[in-house]
Length: 353
Image (cartoon, rainbow, N blue to C red; front, side, top):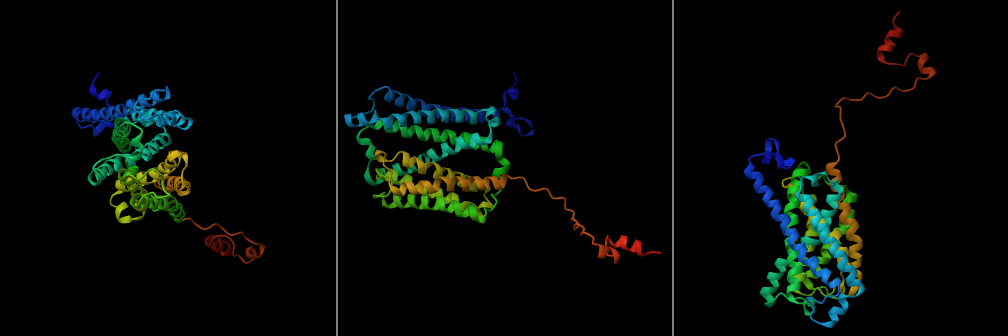
């Protein structure tokens, strides 16, 4: 079978430059898919071992008792499902059949993956460098009960998975929705700006405040380490950037793809990270401020992003370019008697002998 017959549809036709170029693209997608699987398998194996009563990676009995509690058991099952969903998403993004999956499914899975992984990918490496330079180590509060290799496996896996999905998602989006990405987002109406502002701005400002000055008593607890606070700062910047990007026409008009990327990162991060902070709160007790920001950020971020996407992708109303004549007015008996009914030509005809 020829290589041309194996190539996905997006690499055929006049845009198909050479077999070598297609092979390079195929290898890139295979490597990205391999990163996702490589990141997920150790994580799933670790969680399955904990669910079956193992104590691997746990250093004390207190943490072991909490690990086998109801809250952690439910959380471990949910995270296994999320990891399997990430593998399914990566397979769809890397395959030709993935373009036949309804857009709302791909966007929903992609939004969940972006919201959970983008702060890890962008904030964790930077935060690790900052904390290593300032304090000489990268330890956080949670490392007191688990072995260091557990954190390397979990968060290193998140980073690899984020890279793999980012590569696959960008290629899928360009191949499937390039017409949308190359078009500047339409300016959102006032009510969308208000709704998005109520959701994204308080969340972004709170993340910046807690990341810069510490969570204190109102922010997400047990997030005092510099690496964690740096991640909060990055999360806040993404949320605020997603809100501001489409409003600055100098940016959105010249860099439409950068604008869409900012909107996507900001809206998905706010809509996903805010409830994640509630569900993953230290001891299962989120603070009031964390809950309030989540209540605003979830609908605000989702509405802001979806409204601009819908406005930009809505087909324009058909226009014939022909002026429409006004509708004729009803003719009364008095107007008929005086000869004022009908068109001007009809009136001249009636007056002619």
